[in-house]
Image (cartoon, rainbow, N blue to C red; front, side, top):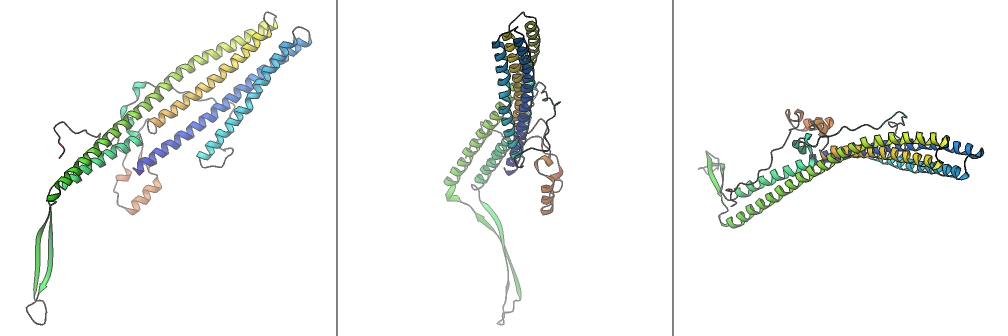
Length: 355
């Protein structure tokens, strides 16, 4: 149980670190998008100012352009605040003091990783056995099953051999001249406690059934979590592809709006609408990519730590294994790979009767 608890904690910490890191990156990309759009809006503001000064447009267009530009700038500090708090949470999870992490740097050329689509039927069900909670529930069933055997053993007599060794003397001096060895069986049988023993067997059997139901529910919960994460990842990937086309369309619409406004074919409101749409779609695309990464982390967590069976060094650190070898002769057990799966708990058959 303690080993499975350790594995569960390892998976939880890794998932939390990955989630915080990706969130930090997503916020960085959203800040970059806001700055890029602010730059475009500033250029539009300059155009509106020039046209206003030349008498070719109204002050309304100028003030609307200025309002949109300042609104975009105002969104950046809030994103920076969220990003800093995410970085502090990441540092705390890593056991560091709040502040900048030397390992993390803002790379202007960084792009969020793309997540390939996951086939729902491509995840083997045996990977459920990676999950520490499934392992712990299975071992609980095995342990309780053994308790039934222990309880049933009290129904039968317990026989043991006992022996005595002594000396006998026939002289007044008391010097022993004969060695006596006595060996005989000892019989212990709780003959009058059969009712109590049978009730104890029934109790242990009921506890076994309870453990079986808990194991079944644990497996079903694990399967649901994996399926939820997988379908969310698949659908988010589909949404991401559509949003990429939407962003490309919004960029083209902004170009057309700028050209039409300069040539006098449309008013400045069309330019503002196109800029607002481009900023919104770009920000949504970054958020969707972040959600895709979050669902990937959820799938990793749901599978108990990934898609491959865990190795022993991932569960028990090398230093710990060396200390265990110094204390006890483990043979080659600590060097073997972990078993791929545990025996499945077997329900009692129809003709199996409980005493």
